Amino acid sequence: MTPPGWVTDRRTPTRAPRGALRLIATVPLPGPANRFDYQSIDPAGGRLYISHMNAGRLIVFDLGSSRVVSEIDSVGRATGVLAVPALHRIYVSAAGRHEIVAVDDRTLKASGRVGGIRFPDGIAYAPVEKKVFVSDESGEGDVAIDASTMRKLSAIPLGGEAGNTHYDSVSHCIVVAVQTRNQLVAIDPATERVVARYEIPGSDGPHGFTLDEPGRLAFITGEGNATLQVVDLRTMRVLSSHKVGNGPDVLAWDPGWRRLYVASESGVVTTFDVAGSELRNIGEVRLPHAHSVAVDPRTHRIYLPLENVNGRPELHVMISRDN
Image (cartoon, rainbow, N blue to C red):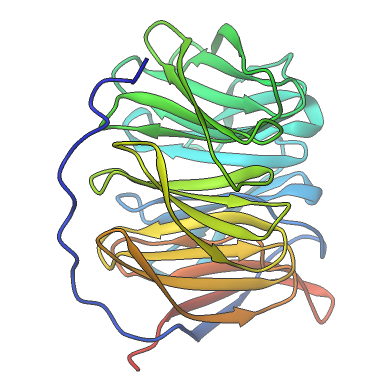
């Protein structure tokens, strides 16, 4: 069954600088020199939330002043993070405690928890149903949670390890990468049931992905073969494949400039320019442990938290070059 609404017009590209990345700032980060994971930007609130995974903390970074304004330490082994400004909440996957934590973005205090999730990772939010969906990687499912009451609603079996999870506002589906089956799975957020499964030929362990929703494209990376694939969400066909750094992990999409950033465990960050459905590799940077990336859609700045720069964690702020 094909989910409704997976067809729409493509977005017209806008002008952007032509080159790869240049460093514009480095910001010391608090805590020990160990692993970061996902990030989430709240453009309206002007904040970046960074999961300092192996420190068990969530870093709150002010985008306007370029400084850390708080650390939240009640999120054991934080992996996924998603800001939902409409609810004044940040949802955090506390994998070390097998739970999801809701944090109030005004008080920066935990306001609710849902436990019993084996390894919570990626997070998506369905705004109509007001539900949070969390990929339970080792639990081989996606967990649905009432976003307001923080009540666990269901565990949706996927039949394989769940990678990242995103909400597609066009199809009105939750989309999950099932990495051990090389599939994308679509879930109806209203019924909390799988409505479609799509094979990804040529993929090896799809975990990280992101969506160009108006353009009806999915950008999916295979951890096992260091490959980025472009999938047409209208037909679910693979349009093209591109090599990226070994161990691709987190992707960031800038819809205004139509730029895609792929950060890899090997420390390679690859930049692609997207024209229609065509991708052009416009360069890469190499930084130690640069496997997490976020982009601010207002300023087009790219944020790369690095776990160890001369013994301390550091945030690199970058932007596309003009030439």
